[in-house]
Amino acid sequence: MPALDSGDTGWVLVCTALVMLMTPGGGLDLLGRQAVGVLAVTGFSFCATYLVARAVDLVLPLRVSEEGEVTGLDQALHSESADDLGSVRSMGRTG
Image (cartoon, rainbow, N blue to C red; front, side):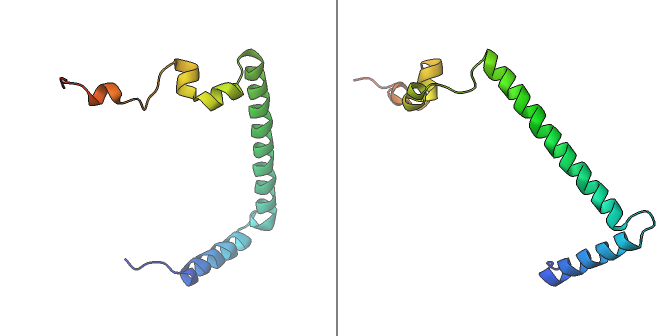
């Protein structure tokens, strides 16, 4: 299958636009309504996510302290180091 180039992509976009404009009940009116719907859903999703995050932050802080960031989250939250391979390297060796 040959690769698509920018001319092919442009032709597909032009044909799609022509079909959309010629479709009864479609056209720019439909595109405008869909754009309003996309903006409404985006705005609602942002506001709902923000409110849920603020509510969770009141109960359980979403951020760690600056000291925890400097120390590292593995050490600050779990008191362990994921990259400490000293005990693995010495396994099975004597002396």
